[in-house]
Amino acid sequence: MADDKGLEHLFHDTLRDIYYAERNILKTLPKLEQAASSDELKAAFRKHLKETEGQVTRLDKVFGLIDRKPMSKKCDAIDGIIKEGDGLIEDYEGTTALDAGLISSAQAVEHYEITRYGTLRRWAKMLGINDGYDLLTETLEQEVATDEALTKLADIEANAKAAEVKKRS
Image (cartoon, rainbow, N blue to C red):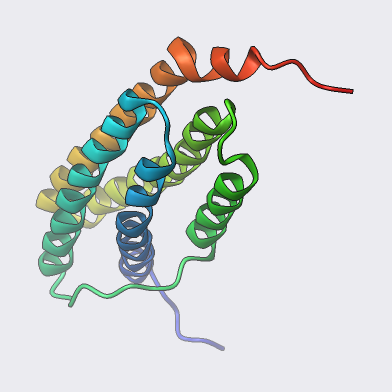
């Protein structure tokens, strides 16, 4: 029988997962900014890049709170989401639908992060890692705000612009 692993181990393992995700998102956001045609969307990606840098710093602090070195664990989920986004850029580059697609890809990332941070902060609270709970809550709130901002950009401009092009038969 395998060694019994508890919530503390699961917390650390999941922390390593989101650390991997955030570090890869840092590499991806400049590509999204470059691909976007809307100045507002480019600005949103730039803003989130700066926020993500702060999120990685907060994760470093959470690792310190549990006396662990910040280390990544490969995350197939975020790799898949990023790969889909890369494919979308390739398939829709130069089209009116690209910004709508970029927003949808970015929101897939945000929803993944919202799930992870929501879980991690609940576990931090249960484990008595109160400073970690506060740090993870701050990041969760940023991720939710980014998702809402992306929805607003989609609703105001990107989706309508993409919908103007009629399907050709």
